[in-house]
Length: 93
Image 1: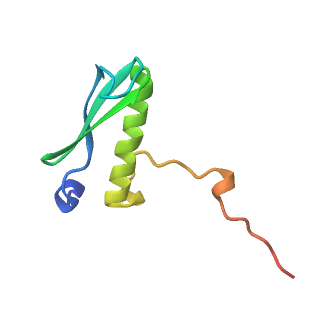
Image 2: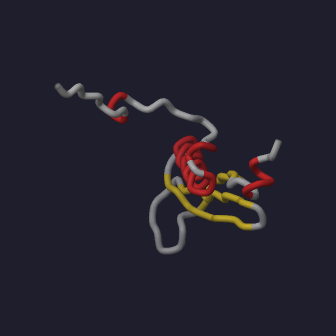
């Protein structure tokens, strides 16, 4: 059986989410710096909010990056479509 990581390369992962000063030129408090890694590459970003809010946002970013990379079939936590997302069946006479 082929491992997804070995077939497609490494998935994006959260390396860290830590409290930080505001990015240069930006005001405000309660900033966090996050680092997302994939292989030997990394993405550094800043987000304002509580640690739990920032962590949720970064988890979504990682999920979206991996979906783009692997396609939605590799989604870690599949979610059932809501009723609004389902096609409507109409019977024609």
